[in-house]
Amino acid sequence: MSEIKSLLRSAKERLAASDIQEIDAEHLFAYVLGISRMDLHNSVKLDATLKSLGDFGVIEDTFAKLISRRASHEPLQYLTGVAYFRHLEIEVGPGVLVPRPESELLVDAVLTHIANLEQTVDGEISVIDLGSGSGALALAIATEAPRSRVIAVEKSEEAITWLKKNVAKISENVRVVAGDVADVLPGVKCDIVIANPPYIPDQQTLPRDVAEHEPHIALFGGATGLELPKLFIDAAARLLKRGGVLAIEHTEEQGAAIDALLSREFIDIALHQDLTGRPRWTSAVRK
Image 1 (spheres, rainbow, N blue to C red):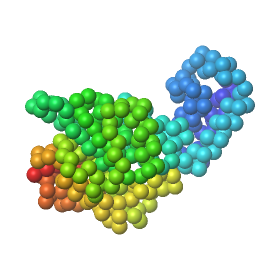
Image 2 (image 1 turned 180 degrees about the vertical axis):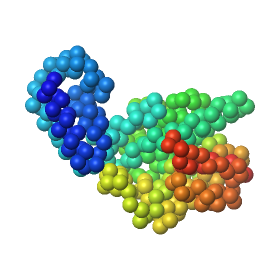
Image 3 (image 1 turned 90 degrees about the horizontal axis):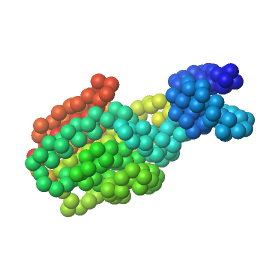
Image 4 (image 1 turned 135 degrees about the vertical axis):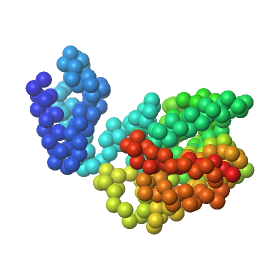
């Protein structure tokens, strides 16, 4: 066990030198062993796992390569292939945005709204997820609100590959539609639209993990960061029934600007905080 402690200590020091949280070393070592991070601290479980895997040299070499990639700021979720969102394990990798836990309160609010609608509406509640990416939000809603009928819209071919993997694994009730929000789903009307548009201003500096590895098409929203969110808002206005609800994510500085963009076609505009207490998404009702 002293060999394991030494290996982890060295890996943590290397990550720390790259300004990366040391706990990622434990996540990666657990991934190599095929156990949970908590099981690393269970000496009986750890010893049994190491004995079953055999050649420690192979384990050590695989781990070293992963630490090297993480020290180069490749996202942890890309290395393990999994991002955790609510109760789901979402498959992710190059070409798709890693789902953020900050989005979970938006999902909570949408689920509450769906539950309220179910008291007065017969049949399914229709939800369209614009810019679905990995499908994390769409799949959370589909699995936690069985009466919902969710359409996941995505433009990027790379992201659609991951979206389809997750839909096939988690809930085939989600319909995947490839298309641009500007003209997708002509003639369709729905009860709820959720949107996570690219909203970061083009010149804004991002952390290396994000800037060097995650898809820019899913991040940058134009010179001010609002050009693409406006397109998503216009699409939501077209797709929503009268009285339908939009929930859209944005930066903590964009609340007032998003309110202004919504004001022509929407009422009851409300700014909401994420899990960190920052104003990160807005809800509105279609006039």
